Length: 539
Image (tube, rainbow, N blue to C red; front, side, top):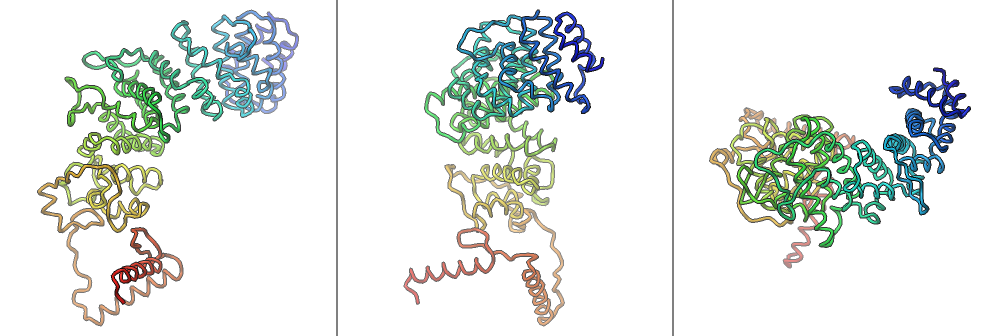
Protein backbone atom coordinates (compact mmCIF):
# COMPACT_ATOMS: atom_id res chain seq x y z
CA UNK A 1 0.00 0.00 0.00
CA UNK A 2 1.23 3.51 -0.90
CA UNK A 3 2.42 5.47 2.12
CA UNK A 4 0.62 8.63 0.96
CA UNK A 5 -2.66 6.64 0.91
CA UNK A 6 -2.07 5.58 4.52
CA UNK A 7 -1.26 9.17 5.53
CA UNK A 8 -4.39 10.52 3.82
CA UNK A 9 -6.57 7.90 5.53
CA UNK A 10 -5.13 8.64 8.98
CA UNK A 11 -5.61 12.36 8.30
CA UNK A 12 -9.31 11.75 7.61
CA UNK A 13 -9.67 10.48 11.17
CA UNK A 14 -12.39 7.85 10.60
CA UNK A 15 -11.61 5.20 13.22
CA UNK A 16 -12.82 2.08 11.36
CA UNK A 17 -11.19 3.09 8.07
CA UNK A 18 -7.94 4.04 9.80
CA UNK A 19 -7.93 0.71 11.63
CA UNK A 20 -8.23 -1.29 8.39
CA UNK A 21 -5.55 0.72 6.57
CA UNK A 22 -3.08 0.53 9.48
CA UNK A 23 -3.61 -3.22 9.80
CA UNK A 24 -2.60 -3.65 6.15
CA UNK A 25 0.39 -1.29 6.60
CA UNK A 26 1.55 -3.13 9.73
CA UNK A 27 1.32 -6.49 8.02
CA UNK A 28 3.36 -5.29 5.04
CA UNK A 29 6.02 -3.56 7.17
CA UNK A 30 6.23 -5.94 10.14
CA UNK A 31 9.76 -7.08 9.16
CA UNK A 32 10.90 -3.72 7.74
CA UNK A 33 14.02 -2.30 9.42
CA UNK A 34 15.40 -0.12 6.61
CA UNK A 35 13.49 2.74 5.07
CA UNK A 36 13.34 4.62 1.80
CA UNK A 37 14.82 8.15 2.05
CA UNK A 38 12.36 9.53 -0.51
CA UNK A 39 9.41 8.81 1.80
CA UNK A 40 11.02 10.27 4.94
CA UNK A 41 8.81 13.39 5.07
CA UNK A 42 5.70 11.27 4.54
CA UNK A 43 6.72 9.04 7.45
CA UNK A 44 7.30 12.07 9.69
CA UNK A 45 3.84 13.36 8.83
CA UNK A 46 2.34 9.95 9.53
CA UNK A 47 4.12 9.85 12.90
CA UNK A 48 2.65 13.25 13.87
CA UNK A 49 -0.84 12.14 12.84
CA UNK A 50 -0.61 8.85 14.73
CA UNK A 51 0.40 10.52 18.00
CA UNK A 52 -2.53 12.93 17.70
CA UNK A 53 -4.87 10.09 16.71
CA UNK A 54 -3.77 8.10 19.77
CA UNK A 55 -4.88 10.93 22.07
CA UNK A 56 -8.50 10.37 21.05
CA UNK A 57 -10.90 8.01 22.81
CA UNK A 58 -10.28 4.81 20.83
CA UNK A 59 -11.19 1.16 21.15
CA UNK A 60 -8.31 -0.95 22.58
CA UNK A 61 -7.96 -2.84 19.29
CA UNK A 62 -7.51 0.45 17.43
CA UNK A 63 -5.02 1.69 20.06
CA UNK A 64 -2.94 -1.47 19.67
CA UNK A 65 -2.92 -1.20 15.86
CA UNK A 66 -1.96 2.48 16.04
CA UNK A 67 0.86 1.67 18.48
CA UNK A 68 2.11 -1.13 16.22
CA UNK A 69 2.42 1.44 13.41
CA UNK A 70 4.29 3.80 15.75
CA UNK A 71 6.63 0.95 16.70
CA UNK A 72 7.42 0.32 13.03
CA UNK A 73 8.05 4.03 12.38
CA UNK A 74 10.23 4.30 15.53
CA UNK A 75 12.76 1.97 13.88
CA UNK A 76 13.68 4.87 11.58
CA UNK A 77 15.94 7.12 13.65
CA UNK A 78 15.38 10.01 11.21
CA UNK A 79 11.62 10.07 11.92
CA UNK A 80 11.66 10.25 15.71
CA UNK A 81 11.00 13.99 16.12
CA UNK A 82 7.20 13.69 16.47
CA UNK A 83 7.69 11.10 19.23
CA UNK A 84 10.41 12.99 21.12
CA UNK A 85 8.26 15.83 22.42
CA UNK A 86 6.86 16.18 25.93
CA UNK A 87 3.34 15.61 24.62
CA UNK A 88 4.30 12.61 22.48
CA UNK A 89 6.21 10.84 25.25
CA UNK A 90 3.46 11.63 27.77
CA UNK A 91 0.90 10.01 25.47
CA UNK A 92 3.02 6.88 25.06
CA UNK A 93 3.89 6.62 28.76
CA UNK A 94 0.20 7.08 29.69
CA UNK A 95 -0.75 4.18 27.43
CA UNK A 96 2.11 2.17 28.94
CA UNK A 97 0.67 2.86 32.40
CA UNK A 98 3.87 4.44 33.73
CA UNK A 99 3.13 8.16 33.36
CA UNK A 100 4.26 9.91 36.54
CA UNK A 101 1.72 12.54 37.55
CA UNK A 102 0.42 13.99 40.80
CA UNK A 103 -3.08 14.16 39.37
CA UNK A 104 -5.31 11.15 38.92
CA UNK A 105 -4.78 9.62 35.49
CA UNK A 106 -7.01 7.35 33.48
CA UNK A 107 -6.10 3.71 34.01
CA UNK A 108 -5.13 1.77 30.89
CA UNK A 109 -6.60 -1.67 31.52
CA UNK A 110 -5.70 -3.34 28.23
CA UNK A 111 -2.46 -5.31 28.54
CA UNK A 112 -1.87 -5.38 24.78
CA UNK A 113 -1.92 -1.57 24.76
CA UNK A 114 0.59 -1.46 27.63
CA UNK A 115 2.87 -3.93 25.87
CA UNK A 116 2.90 -2.12 22.51
CA UNK A 117 3.49 1.23 24.25
CA UNK A 118 6.48 -0.19 26.11
CA UNK A 119 7.96 -1.53 22.87
CA UNK A 120 7.58 1.91 21.27
CA UNK A 121 9.25 3.61 24.24
CA UNK A 122 12.15 1.15 24.15
CA UNK A 123 12.82 1.92 20.47
CA UNK A 124 12.52 5.69 20.94
CA UNK A 125 14.62 5.90 24.13
CA UNK A 126 17.35 3.72 22.62
CA UNK A 127 17.70 5.87 19.49
CA UNK A 128 17.04 9.42 20.72
CA UNK A 129 19.15 11.42 23.23
CA UNK A 130 16.32 13.98 23.32
CA UNK A 131 13.87 11.28 24.37
CA UNK A 132 16.30 10.13 27.07
CA UNK A 133 16.44 13.67 28.44
CA UNK A 134 12.66 14.08 28.41
CA UNK A 135 12.03 10.73 30.12
CA UNK A 136 14.38 11.83 32.91
CA UNK A 137 12.45 15.09 33.30
CA UNK A 138 9.12 13.24 33.21
CA UNK A 139 10.34 10.84 35.96
CA UNK A 140 9.17 7.77 34.07
CA UNK A 141 11.47 5.68 36.22
CA UNK A 142 9.16 6.37 39.18
CA UNK A 143 6.17 4.92 37.34
CA UNK A 144 8.22 1.88 36.27
CA UNK A 145 9.49 1.30 39.81
CA UNK A 146 5.94 1.50 41.20
CA UNK A 147 4.69 -1.17 38.82
CA UNK A 148 7.72 -3.44 39.38
CA UNK A 149 7.10 -3.20 43.12
CA UNK A 150 3.62 -4.68 42.56
CA UNK A 151 4.78 -7.75 40.61
CA UNK A 152 4.17 -9.92 43.66
CA UNK A 153 0.56 -8.71 43.94
CA UNK A 154 -0.50 -8.26 40.30
CA UNK A 155 -0.61 -11.00 37.72
CA UNK A 156 1.06 -9.44 34.70
CA UNK A 157 2.11 -11.44 31.61
CA UNK A 158 5.77 -12.17 30.97
CA UNK A 159 5.99 -9.80 27.97
CA UNK A 160 4.85 -6.76 29.99
CA UNK A 161 7.29 -7.52 32.81
CA UNK A 162 10.10 -8.13 30.31
CA UNK A 163 9.63 -4.81 28.51
CA UNK A 164 9.21 -2.97 31.83
CA UNK A 165 12.65 -4.28 32.76
CA UNK A 166 14.12 -3.70 29.30
CA UNK A 167 13.00 -0.04 29.37
CA UNK A 168 14.41 0.35 32.89
CA UNK A 169 17.71 -1.12 31.71
CA UNK A 170 17.89 1.33 28.78
CA UNK A 171 17.09 4.32 30.99
CA UNK A 172 19.71 3.39 33.60
CA UNK A 173 22.31 2.57 30.96
CA UNK A 174 21.87 5.83 29.04
CA UNK A 175 21.24 8.36 31.84
CA UNK A 176 23.46 8.75 34.91
CA UNK A 177 20.82 10.87 36.69
CA UNK A 178 18.17 8.15 36.27
CA UNK A 179 20.69 5.57 37.49
CA UNK A 180 21.28 7.59 40.65
CA UNK A 181 17.58 8.31 41.12
CA UNK A 182 16.70 4.62 40.98
CA UNK A 183 19.57 3.59 43.25
CA UNK A 184 19.09 6.25 45.93
CA UNK A 185 15.63 7.85 45.89
CA UNK A 186 13.75 4.71 44.84
CA UNK A 187 15.96 2.20 46.74
CA UNK A 188 16.51 0.39 43.47
CA UNK A 189 19.05 -2.17 44.71
CA UNK A 190 16.58 -3.52 47.27
CA UNK A 191 13.69 -3.32 44.77
CA UNK A 192 15.54 -5.16 41.99
CA UNK A 193 16.99 -7.74 44.41
CA UNK A 194 13.45 -8.55 45.59
CA UNK A 195 12.31 -8.76 41.95
CA UNK A 196 15.19 -11.14 41.15
CA UNK A 197 14.30 -13.29 44.15
CA UNK A 198 10.66 -13.41 43.01
CA UNK A 199 11.70 -14.30 39.45
CA UNK A 200 14.02 -17.10 40.57
CA UNK A 201 11.39 -18.44 42.99
CA UNK A 202 13.97 -19.23 45.70
CA UNK A 203 13.52 -20.34 49.30
CA UNK A 204 16.08 -19.62 52.02
CA UNK A 205 17.83 -22.16 54.21
CA UNK A 206 20.00 -19.64 56.09
CA UNK A 207 20.21 -15.82 55.85
CA UNK A 208 22.73 -16.08 53.00
CA UNK A 209 22.10 -19.57 51.64
CA UNK A 210 19.40 -20.54 49.17
CA UNK A 211 17.65 -23.83 49.92
CA UNK A 212 18.28 -26.48 47.27
CA UNK A 213 16.98 -29.97 46.72
CA UNK A 214 19.36 -32.92 46.60
CA UNK A 215 20.90 -33.54 43.17
CA UNK A 216 21.00 -31.27 40.12
CA UNK A 217 18.87 -28.13 40.16
CA UNK A 218 16.34 -27.93 37.30
CA UNK A 219 17.10 -25.35 34.58
CA UNK A 220 15.48 -21.94 34.97
CA UNK A 221 12.60 -21.69 32.43
CA UNK A 222 13.13 -19.50 29.35
CA UNK A 223 10.82 -16.63 30.35
CA UNK A 224 12.21 -16.40 33.89
CA UNK A 225 15.75 -16.46 32.47
CA UNK A 226 14.97 -13.56 30.13
CA UNK A 227 13.55 -11.45 32.95
CA UNK A 228 16.36 -12.40 35.33
CA UNK A 229 18.98 -11.25 32.80
CA UNK A 230 17.26 -7.86 32.42
CA UNK A 231 17.19 -7.49 36.22
CA UNK A 232 20.90 -8.38 36.43
CA UNK A 233 21.69 -5.73 33.80
CA UNK A 234 19.70 -3.06 35.69
CA UNK A 235 21.45 -4.00 38.94
CA UNK A 236 24.81 -3.80 37.18
CA UNK A 237 24.03 -0.23 36.09
CA UNK A 238 23.00 0.99 39.54
CA UNK A 239 25.82 -0.76 41.47
CA UNK A 240 28.59 0.32 39.11
CA UNK A 241 30.61 2.13 41.81
CA UNK A 242 29.72 -0.07 44.79
CA UNK A 243 33.01 -1.99 44.86
CA UNK A 244 34.95 1.29 45.09
CA UNK A 245 33.26 2.74 48.17
CA UNK A 246 32.81 1.81 51.80
CA UNK A 247 29.37 0.54 52.79
CA UNK A 248 27.71 0.54 56.21
CA UNK A 249 26.37 -2.61 57.87
CA UNK A 250 22.84 -2.13 56.52
CA UNK A 251 24.07 -1.83 52.93
CA UNK A 252 26.53 -4.70 53.45
CA UNK A 253 23.65 -6.96 54.51
CA UNK A 254 21.73 -5.95 51.37
CA UNK A 255 24.73 -6.67 49.14
CA UNK A 256 25.33 -10.02 50.85
CA UNK A 257 21.70 -10.96 50.25
CA UNK A 258 22.14 -10.06 46.59
CA UNK A 259 25.45 -11.96 46.51
CA UNK A 260 23.74 -15.09 47.82
CA UNK A 261 21.17 -14.84 45.02
CA UNK A 262 23.98 -14.41 42.49
CA UNK A 263 25.71 -17.49 43.85
CA UNK A 264 22.46 -19.36 43.23
CA UNK A 265 22.40 -17.96 39.67
CA UNK A 266 25.87 -19.46 39.12
CA UNK A 267 24.74 -22.83 40.45
CA UNK A 268 21.75 -23.19 38.12
CA UNK A 269 21.53 -23.49 34.35
CA UNK A 270 19.16 -21.92 31.86
CA UNK A 271 17.32 -23.35 28.88
CA UNK A 272 20.21 -24.30 26.58
CA UNK A 273 24.01 -24.00 26.73
CA UNK A 274 24.24 -20.58 25.03
CA UNK A 275 21.53 -19.11 27.23
CA UNK A 276 23.24 -20.50 30.34
CA UNK A 277 26.53 -18.90 29.26
CA UNK A 278 24.81 -15.53 28.76
CA UNK A 279 22.98 -15.82 32.09
CA UNK A 280 26.20 -16.64 33.94
CA UNK A 281 28.00 -13.81 32.13
CA UNK A 282 25.55 -11.21 33.49
CA UNK A 283 25.87 -12.81 36.93
CA UNK A 284 29.67 -12.55 36.87
CA UNK A 285 29.52 -8.92 35.70
CA UNK A 286 27.29 -8.01 38.65
CA UNK A 287 29.34 -9.98 41.19
CA UNK A 288 32.30 -7.82 40.18
CA UNK A 289 30.38 -4.72 41.34
CA UNK A 290 29.73 -5.97 44.88
CA UNK A 291 31.84 -4.57 47.74
CA UNK A 292 34.81 -6.90 48.27
CA UNK A 293 33.94 -7.70 51.86
CA UNK A 294 30.53 -9.00 50.71
CA UNK A 295 32.01 -11.64 48.38
CA UNK A 296 32.38 -13.97 51.38
CA UNK A 297 28.83 -15.18 50.64
CA UNK A 298 30.31 -17.21 47.78
CA UNK A 299 31.92 -19.42 50.45
CA UNK A 300 29.11 -19.28 53.04
CA UNK A 301 27.10 -22.46 52.25
CA UNK A 302 27.93 -25.47 54.37
CA UNK A 303 29.80 -28.40 52.84
CA UNK A 304 27.25 -31.04 51.93
CA UNK A 305 27.40 -34.40 50.12
CA UNK A 306 28.28 -33.76 46.49
CA UNK A 307 29.75 -30.29 47.06
CA UNK A 308 33.40 -29.44 46.39
CA UNK A 309 35.25 -28.97 49.68
CA UNK A 310 38.68 -27.35 50.18
CA UNK A 311 40.17 -26.45 53.57
CA UNK A 312 36.74 -27.10 55.08
CA UNK A 313 35.05 -24.54 52.82
CA UNK A 314 32.43 -25.03 50.07
CA UNK A 315 34.19 -24.15 46.79
CA UNK A 316 31.33 -24.93 44.37
CA UNK A 317 30.86 -21.31 43.29
CA UNK A 318 34.60 -20.63 42.87
CA UNK A 319 34.98 -23.83 40.84
CA UNK A 320 32.13 -22.75 38.54
CA UNK A 321 33.79 -19.34 38.07
CA UNK A 322 37.05 -21.07 37.16
CA UNK A 323 35.28 -23.30 34.63
CA UNK A 324 33.58 -20.21 33.21
CA UNK A 325 36.98 -18.52 32.85
CA UNK A 326 38.44 -21.50 31.01
CA UNK A 327 35.50 -21.66 28.59
CA UNK A 328 35.97 -17.99 27.79
CA UNK A 329 39.69 -18.55 27.25
CA UNK A 330 39.01 -21.43 24.87
CA UNK A 331 36.45 -19.43 22.95
CA UNK A 332 38.99 -16.64 22.35
CA UNK A 333 36.33 -14.18 21.15
CA UNK A 334 36.17 -10.55 22.36
CA UNK A 335 38.59 -11.31 25.17
CA UNK A 336 38.39 -7.88 26.78
CA UNK A 337 34.61 -7.99 27.20
CA UNK A 338 34.37 -11.69 28.01
CA UNK A 339 37.46 -12.28 30.16
CA UNK A 340 38.25 -9.19 32.20
CA UNK A 341 35.11 -9.30 34.43
CA UNK A 342 35.69 -12.89 35.59
CA UNK A 343 39.47 -12.38 35.90
CA UNK A 344 38.98 -9.26 38.04
CA UNK A 345 36.38 -11.05 40.19
CA UNK A 346 38.66 -14.05 40.83
CA UNK A 347 41.66 -11.78 41.47
CA UNK A 348 39.87 -9.70 44.12
CA UNK A 349 38.29 -12.79 45.71
CA UNK A 350 41.73 -14.41 45.94
CA UNK A 351 43.21 -11.24 47.40
CA UNK A 352 40.73 -11.04 50.29
CA UNK A 353 39.97 -14.72 50.96
CA UNK A 354 42.89 -17.03 51.77
CA UNK A 355 40.96 -20.25 51.09
CA UNK A 356 39.88 -18.98 47.65
CA UNK A 357 43.46 -18.04 46.76
CA UNK A 358 44.89 -21.39 47.86
CA UNK A 359 42.18 -23.31 45.98
CA UNK A 360 42.75 -21.27 42.81
CA UNK A 361 46.52 -21.66 43.07
CA UNK A 362 46.17 -25.43 43.39
CA UNK A 363 44.06 -25.46 40.20
CA UNK A 364 45.89 -22.81 38.14
CA UNK A 365 49.48 -23.02 39.39
CA UNK A 366 50.04 -26.56 40.65
CA UNK A 367 53.62 -27.50 41.65
CA UNK A 368 55.88 -27.29 38.60
CA UNK A 369 56.89 -30.53 36.88
CA UNK A 370 57.24 -29.57 33.23
CA UNK A 371 60.34 -27.37 32.98
CA UNK A 372 61.26 -28.31 29.41
CA UNK A 373 58.58 -26.14 27.77
CA UNK A 374 58.07 -22.42 28.02
CA UNK A 375 55.32 -21.38 30.48
CA UNK A 376 53.16 -20.11 27.60
CA UNK A 377 53.35 -23.41 25.67
CA UNK A 378 50.69 -26.03 26.36
CA UNK A 379 46.98 -26.42 27.08
CA UNK A 380 46.86 -26.11 30.85
CA UNK A 381 45.05 -23.16 32.41
CA UNK A 382 48.42 -21.75 33.49
CA UNK A 383 49.73 -21.90 29.90
CA UNK A 384 46.64 -20.15 28.55
CA UNK A 385 46.84 -17.34 31.11
CA UNK A 386 50.59 -16.82 30.61
CA UNK A 387 49.95 -16.44 26.86
CA UNK A 388 47.57 -13.59 27.69
CA UNK A 389 50.36 -11.76 29.54
CA UNK A 390 51.77 -10.65 26.18
CA UNK A 391 48.37 -10.01 24.56
CA UNK A 392 48.02 -6.95 22.34
CA UNK A 393 45.15 -5.57 24.48
CA UNK A 394 46.61 -3.84 27.53
CA UNK A 395 43.59 -4.51 29.77
CA UNK A 396 43.57 -8.24 28.99
CA UNK A 397 47.33 -8.44 29.51
CA UNK A 398 47.16 -6.60 32.83
CA UNK A 399 44.21 -8.64 34.19
CA UNK A 400 45.85 -11.98 33.40
CA UNK A 401 49.18 -10.92 34.94
CA UNK A 402 47.49 -9.46 38.04
CA UNK A 403 45.53 -12.68 38.62
CA UNK A 404 48.64 -14.85 38.49
CA UNK A 405 50.61 -12.34 40.58
CA UNK A 406 48.01 -12.49 43.37
CA UNK A 407 48.01 -16.31 43.23
CA UNK A 408 51.79 -16.05 43.78
CA UNK A 409 51.08 -13.89 46.87
CA UNK A 410 52.56 -10.93 44.98
CA UNK A 411 56.03 -12.43 45.32
CA UNK A 412 58.29 -11.51 42.39
CA UNK A 413 60.47 -14.62 42.62
CA UNK A 414 57.47 -16.94 42.70
CA UNK A 415 55.76 -15.03 39.88
CA UNK A 416 58.87 -15.30 37.67
CA UNK A 417 59.17 -18.99 38.54
CA UNK A 418 55.70 -19.74 37.11
CA UNK A 419 55.63 -17.29 34.18
CA UNK A 420 59.23 -16.55 33.16
CA UNK A 421 60.84 -13.12 33.54
CA UNK A 422 60.11 -12.19 29.92
CA UNK A 423 56.35 -12.64 30.40
CA UNK A 424 56.40 -11.07 33.86
CA UNK A 425 58.39 -7.97 32.87
CA UNK A 426 55.34 -5.85 31.92
CA UNK A 427 53.65 -6.11 35.31
CA UNK A 428 56.93 -5.85 37.22
CA UNK A 429 57.88 -2.68 35.34
CA UNK A 430 54.45 -1.15 36.02
CA UNK A 431 54.77 -1.98 39.73
CA UNK A 432 58.41 -0.86 40.10
CA UNK A 433 59.46 -4.42 40.93
CA UNK A 434 62.00 -5.07 38.17
CA UNK A 435 64.72 -5.52 40.79
CA UNK A 436 62.67 -8.10 42.71
CA UNK A 437 60.92 -7.85 46.06
CA UNK A 438 57.32 -8.22 47.07
CA UNK A 439 54.21 -6.08 47.18
CA UNK A 440 52.65 -5.35 50.54
CA UNK A 441 49.71 -7.66 51.13
CA UNK A 442 48.10 -9.74 53.85
CA UNK A 443 49.33 -13.18 52.89
CA UNK A 444 50.29 -16.17 55.00
CA UNK A 445 53.94 -17.17 55.22
CA UNK A 446 53.52 -20.75 53.98
CA UNK A 447 56.21 -21.76 51.52
CA UNK A 448 55.73 -22.84 47.92
CA UNK A 449 56.15 -26.62 47.52
CA UNK A 450 58.66 -27.58 44.83
CA UNK A 451 58.52 -30.94 43.10
CA UNK A 452 61.59 -33.15 42.83
CA UNK A 453 61.63 -32.51 39.06
CA UNK A 454 61.76 -28.76 39.62
CA UNK A 455 64.44 -28.93 42.31
CA UNK A 456 66.63 -31.05 40.06
CA UNK A 457 66.23 -28.76 37.03
CA UNK A 458 66.25 -25.42 38.90
CA UNK A 459 69.99 -24.59 38.43
CA UNK A 460 69.59 -25.00 34.66
CA UNK A 461 66.34 -23.03 34.19
CA UNK A 462 66.65 -19.85 32.16
CA UNK A 463 64.74 -17.29 34.30
CA UNK A 464 63.82 -15.21 31.23
CA UNK A 465 62.10 -18.02 29.32
CA UNK A 466 61.12 -20.06 32.39
CA UNK A 467 62.43 -23.38 31.05
CA UNK A 468 65.57 -25.50 30.74
CA UNK A 469 67.26 -24.37 27.52
CA UNK A 470 69.33 -26.64 25.32
CA UNK A 471 73.01 -25.87 25.59
CA UNK A 472 74.07 -23.99 22.48
CA UNK A 473 77.59 -23.96 21.07
CA UNK A 474 79.73 -21.04 22.22
CA UNK A 475 79.89 -18.62 19.24
CA UNK A 476 83.24 -17.27 20.47
CA UNK A 477 84.88 -20.67 20.73
CA UNK A 478 88.17 -20.69 18.82
CA UNK A 479 88.44 -16.87 18.69
CA UNK A 480 91.52 -15.01 19.86
CA UNK A 481 91.16 -12.30 22.53
CA UNK A 482 91.63 -9.63 19.83
CA UNK A 483 88.78 -11.13 17.74
CA UNK A 484 86.49 -11.25 20.78
CA UNK A 485 87.26 -7.61 21.58
CA UNK A 486 86.60 -6.64 17.95
CA UNK A 487 83.18 -8.39 17.93
CA UNK A 488 82.27 -6.81 21.29
CA UNK A 489 83.10 -3.27 20.05
CA UNK A 490 81.20 -3.95 16.83
CA UNK A 491 78.13 -4.80 18.91
CA UNK A 492 78.56 -1.70 21.10
CA UNK A 493 78.77 0.51 18.00
CA UNK A 494 75.62 -1.03 16.55
CA UNK A 495 73.71 -0.36 19.77
CA UNK A 496 75.13 3.17 19.90
CA UNK A 497 73.96 3.87 16.35
CA UNK A 498 70.46 2.54 17.04
CA UNK A 499 70.29 4.63 20.21
CA UNK A 500 71.48 7.87 18.52
CA UNK A 501 68.98 7.37 15.69
CA UNK A 502 66.28 6.82 18.36
CA UNK A 503 65.37 3.39 16.99
CA UNK A 504 65.83 1.99 20.51
CA UNK A 505 66.36 3.55 23.93
CA UNK A 506 68.67 1.71 26.34
CA UNK A 507 66.96 1.35 29.72
CA UNK A 508 68.20 0.56 33.18
CA UNK A 509 66.63 -0.28 36.52
CA UNK A 510 66.69 2.46 39.16
CA UNK A 511 67.33 1.66 42.85
CA UNK A 512 63.54 1.88 43.37
CA UNK A 513 62.99 -0.95 40.86
CA UNK A 514 61.54 1.17 38.04
CA UNK A 515 62.67 1.29 34.42
CA UNK A 516 64.33 4.53 33.33
CA UNK A 517 66.58 5.69 30.46
CA UNK A 518 70.06 4.29 31.03
CA UNK A 519 71.73 7.64 31.80
CA UNK A 520 69.03 8.42 34.41
CA UNK A 521 69.33 4.96 35.98
CA UNK A 522 73.15 5.29 36.22
CA UNK A 523 72.82 8.77 37.75
CA UNK A 524 70.26 7.55 40.32
CA UNK A 525 72.46 4.64 41.30
CA UNK A 526 75.46 6.96 41.67
CA UNK A 527 73.39 9.35 43.81
CA UNK A 528 72.21 6.52 46.04
CA UNK A 529 75.75 5.20 46.43
CA UNK A 530 76.97 8.69 47.30
CA UNK A 531 74.17 9.06 49.84
CA UNK A 532 75.03 5.68 51.39
CA UNK A 533 78.68 6.64 51.66
CA UNK A 534 77.74 9.92 53.39
CA UNK A 535 75.57 8.06 55.89
CA UNK A 536 78.52 5.79 56.71
CA UNK A 537 80.84 8.76 57.12
CA UNK A 538 83.03 7.79 54.17
CA UNK A 539 84.82 10.37 52.05
